[in-house]
Image (cartoon, rainbow, N blue to C red; front, side):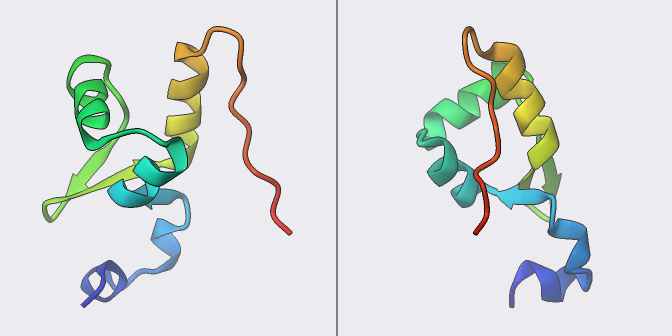
Length: 77
């Protein structure tokens, strides 16, 4: 059973990433993510024991903690 079946609303998660996808996209480890969530207010929501990350909030966080880089979305084909 996937999360869409549990929640019943697929459209709701278009703007969210799950933990594994976020780790892969950012190229960071689980321990780095946990540390950022605990000490640096990395934006997340927890639902039924699973973590989800709003794409827009993550972009804002990355831009606010970046020195000389503005995070941009990859272009879709």
